[in-house]
Length: 103
Image 1 (cartoon, rainbow, N blue to C red):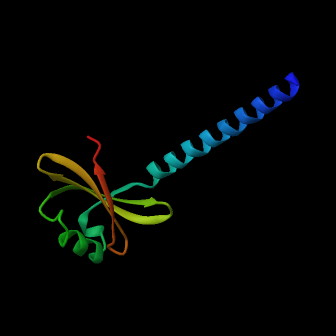
Image 2 (cartoon, helix red, strand yellow; image 1 turned 135 degrees about the vertical axis):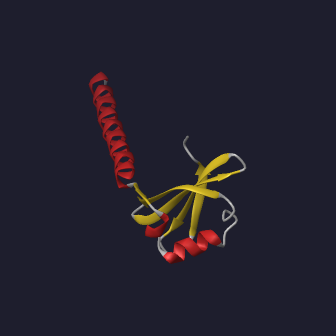
């Protein structure tokens, strides 16, 4: 019985370790795919969507092109009322979310 339990525990540890490595590789790929660009590099449909949004009054300080879940997105770092936000749009101009930007 002890041998069976030890085998199960070992199998679980190998599985968890493999999953952790895959998650780390995915996070690293995300960081590698993030590219700083200028507003001129952003498609017009995405620029228009941002200009027509509630974020249009914010000051855009940085723009990035990145791939999230195999979909091309654009990230705009915008300061609103003293807080920096990362605003995301996909390549067709659809709003994809926001989060507080890393400082």
